[in-house]
Image 1 (cartoon, chains in turn yellow, blue):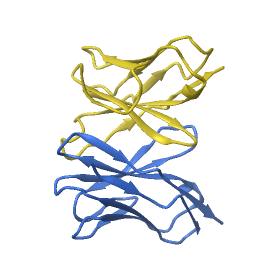
Image 2 (cartoon, rainbow over the protein chains, first blue to last red):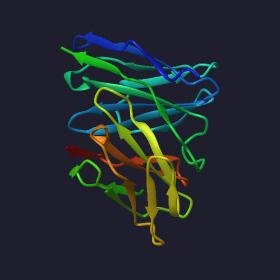
Image 3 (cartoon, each protein chain N blue to C red):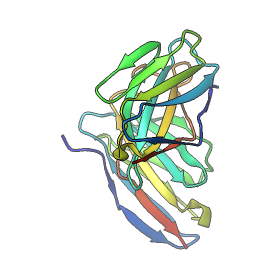
Image 4 (spheres, rainbow over the protein chains, first blue to last red):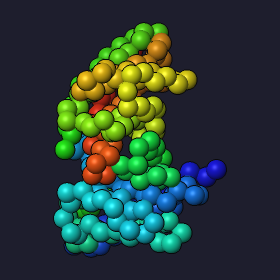
Amino acid sequence: KAGVTQTPRYLIKTRGQQVTLSCSPISGHRSVSWYQQTPGQGLQFLFEYFSETQRNKGNFPGRFSGRQFSNSRSEMNVSTLELGDSALYLCASSLATAGAGSYEQYFGPGTRLTVT
Amino acid sequence: LAKTTQPISMDSYEGQEVNITCSHNNIATNDYITWYQQFPSQGPRFIIQGYKTKVTNEVASLFIPADRKSSTLSLPRVSLSDTAVYYCLVDEDSNYQLIWGAGTKLIIKP
């Protein structure tokens, strides 16, 4: 069974630009969550999508948005990039959604975004 | 909302048993506790999950006392390859929130 894939793996953007990251979950998984990981802040939850609906959102500005398609693939978009957005962006998929009891997430390798 | 607290770092030696404790106040009866392992430049990987007493799998054990205010991940006979960051996570059943700890950097020495 193929794991979670994320594209691109590495990305360099300049301040003010926007970026779209893609995540393909494990086949059959309907939940996709996004995380931002920086050395100083650890894992920060961005949002979770389940069956094309956003179920949860973390404490991030509106510049961060996402969506999920009918095939469960998900994209996240960051507009008007800032230097502080440089981070590893991780996507995780699961069969169930948060709050459903036993809940195991499978993480992708991440997209390393550098903003200059 | 629950809050999770774990030690920032720990050291141990090959062949030892390592116990990492996570404190989590305000968790509800149905909230699950999960532990993940992360190596550099990789996404976290599921280790073990439970919500009461003790759970054991082929790589670790998870101990949760009756008051559920903490949980302990136990790694038996660690090796150098167990050097990683370990995260505890509380899955809040009532409001669908995932409360991640800040991670414990475990360094195993020869």
